[in-house]
Length: 368
Image (tube, one colour):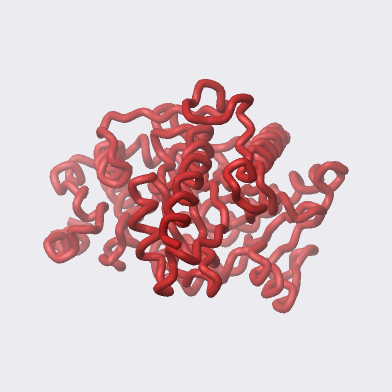
């Protein structure tokens, strides 16, 4: 059988890596029921977790239809990671109306909680329906997708509400920037880092062909950014320093609606699973809403251990200021964001962040 070697590897790895959700969700009988072509597709999804058995998720979708086509596998993965039933269905909703525990009028003003102006960011992942997902794209696919998005960006650049410019990493692209300009954008947290150094993304095929097809659109005020060619085709985000969470949330929704209405762009989605993303951790909303906040009392030992202990029951994740697996700031600054993406609405994510920050501030004061 063509995939006997991979099946044997999965069986051998299962016992030693109980935290690898893809390996634990793999069913040899289900796999045997698939056609050889389908088996090849599913095995491609699993490759990152086989090559990196220390992965938590252990798989990436490679085609927009994978979650529906291989539902018996992905339903188990999603249930294990997101703590939902295998038949769970996702609903998308951006309206804050009806969510309990929010201020009257729906203005999520962190200043009213006694917090200073904070660095706020809300982003979503999106993929186009007419391309494979990044893990299965060829170099030509990546360059064609970038070209398609450059046409869309020309519309934003001509709009006075957006303006700005597109910065490409593709050799020979008319908007190609040099390494110094690229490193400056990375240092400013505007552009993503070199993906070829990430062993998980490399094994998944997502980092292949670096830097072809990669770049970012940046608005004139640098508050609206679209990454091209990272883990998903697009990472669309709004960012600003302020106190009203609604500002970045509402601006993102407005900008997302504008981008989605550009002729020729169609975002991949599933009737049951919502927004389709490469990684099952982001499926559903594809959204991450975060703030950078100083909590020196809770990080007095130089770690984020106490903050994580407090934030976990609140449904919040704690990261370093440079993202996942980076250290906290010397002044106790950490990145706080709701951990849920699936079977939660976009509005609920921003509400969880607001309510969680209120409780976190209380714990920080008590730790003084």
